[in-house]
Amino acid sequence: MSIAYKSKKTILNMKKLSFLTSALVASALLFTACTKEEDKKETPTPTQKTIVGIASADTSFSILVAGLTKAGLVATLNGTGNFTVFAPKNAAFRALQIDEKYINGLSGEDLEGFKSVLLYHVLGTEVKSTQLKNAYEPTLFKVGNNGVSLKIGIAPIKLNKDVNVITADVDASNGVVHIIDAVLLPPTVVDIAINDPLFTSLVAAVAKAELVETLDNTDNLTVFAPINQAFADINFNLEGTTKEQLVPILTAHVLGSQVRSTQIGNGQKVTTLNTAVELTFNTTSGVKLNGGKTTDASVVAADIQAINGVVHVINKVILP
Image (cartoon, rainbow, N blue to C red; front, side, top):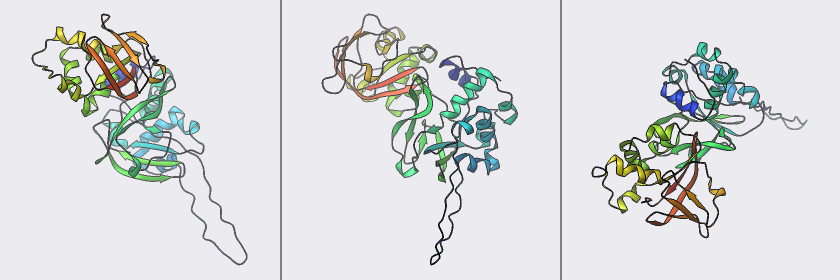
């Protein structure tokens, strides 16, 4: 096996070959001192382990520790900080045929790709289980300056729809560790939709239109993703719609370059992959767009970062 990382598509290739890897962070040595006074004695507080220290002390994390060491993340993150690490145990790595020998054989671009996947398991702030919410959180794996999004669900806690937290809130001196039962896979724009139950209608339409591979393998996309209710509002009948009818509808929701919400200007016009459809934006109150037969579609959630583009959630289907 090899992990190549020449572009954002590389992680997709890793997924297709069934071996993505996971992550754990780093550390900072923190020593707690106690003062002594003649009239008063205090019990010294034991030194709390860093995130790496916690993993190193448990043999069930030996593959994770090998990965952090090989990728140079122990040194990179060996400072004071407040991290959240979603940590897979050895069994999760071995399920993807990843072990210490495999990790130690990585070099060059393969190693850089592996490092990026490890960083996808790390948030840059400390978030205890009681603070988790239904949201997309940016990770330390960045595309450009933007952290690739991790989908978090609660009650029960789920990551990217299928990954479970099996032990939460392991305190460290520089953050918190949540132990998970599988390796997290950095998402493409298609995976963003697959991992969120709000987009089942969109996912079914993309599959029927045979656009999954195209959207998975194209870099720097912007996708305006309609929620299920948007399809229900137009009484959309997937069974009664052919592939040939679906393609112009779906491509009207995609731009061939990555455009984040901060880059959208009032009155700005952009042409979609369906070149017959131009979108016009109105930013006077939130972000709205007109295109084809559709008017006043609202962006209800913005800037969900994938490895090959960005997704904005909208409340209407854009009809050519």
